[in-house]
Image (cartoon, rainbow, N blue to C red; front, side, top):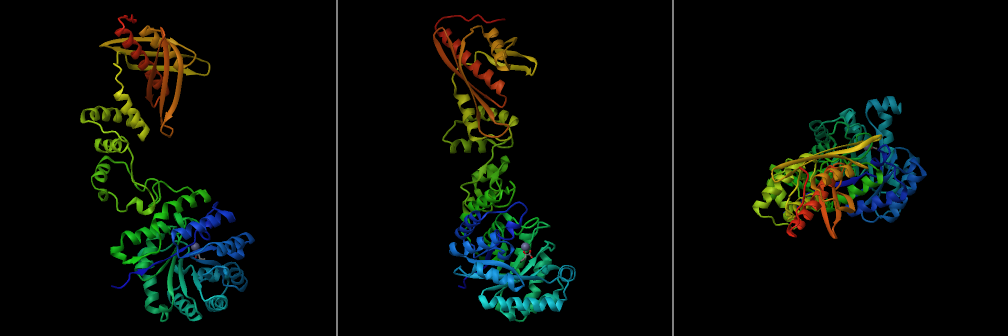
Length: 515
Ligand code: KIV
Ligand code: ZN
């Protein structure tokens, strides 16, 4: 059987990607990224634009010397000085490549270069010929190809192939094209350029209309066999085609493309995190493949489906891109199956009856909190399993405090159908709440310890309060959790009171509560 064709992955994170505003990397950071790109299995690393600064030159040179595996490429305008600088930087690599370019759209030729089409064509050919003196591996890009006259573009491509370009890259420099059109441009080149089989056709798409990946894939469909892309899609303006999206589209839809890449997809998540960390460019949560939500399911119906059969709502296996597992985000929209499955994962095997009650508490918490995390769930289980009889149950709590305000609390407790209410002032809202509880419960223990910690993360995290109280030589602890820390404190104190009351009752002592 014929081996499937391969798409060459040309990574330009360190050149076009680094052109993103604010994404500047130092030499050691560039080396780290380049080594990770080699682990990722990219075929070509465009390491920089050597003539642009001594720092860029040194970075490209160090990468050429130290990074093994991929071809190391440098960018050069179609002028001798750039090409020489580029060669001096990349020549140390086992497989060096020179990438030279000049714009071919009339807009650029007339307004920017102030040249004629003929002059540009000749300059392109001269640049390729000159680069070929250094290495056989020469790539040429007609910048702004998409907005170039197609007949003229064909003649430039043909001429540079004749001059020896081993790769011809067709850039959508300003991200202007749409997939049908871009695919057609590539198809036209294959139809009209007579020597096209002597070169690899590459594409380089910008994302100004959010179509960089779609355009790249349309080009692949039309015969392009190199895609220029960046990790996380970073790059000039709206960025370049995202490497991870191109690669995973080709892999996931192999049925359509019948193509492979050399990328070790399990390295994708790690590469994304490294690039994001070093460039300081956060990845949007809903970003395809590498966003925090890319493998997170929030809706109850989806969670249920994924638990029953992963592919109901997942077209890729998260492990294939180096993410350990999909997350079923527990929210108010989650169902019992989602909650129970997470509990099982956490080691809790809950009977149906207990699950009913726990699910009610889960819903109440999820209404207050955006996400219910593992710690929250464990706390809900613990809360349900604490066998302290709830002699006094918290029904209502209202506190007021602030600068220049005397902290006060009003508490209403329920005890065997009776409602008991008290108010008190204190040193702070927690102290006031405890004093109001004391007035009702009438035990008056000594508070010997109070600890508050956040369960899980985020601004809406639950507060978990643990108290220790002492009464007549008996020390008991109490626990309470809530998204409101005053309520958590009151619950913890009441939990301790209930323990004390139960213990005193079993010792035959009556508690006189306020009525
Ligand atoms: O966007 C572009 O046209 C480029 C070229 C230098 C390939 O980055
Ligand atoms: Zn570009």
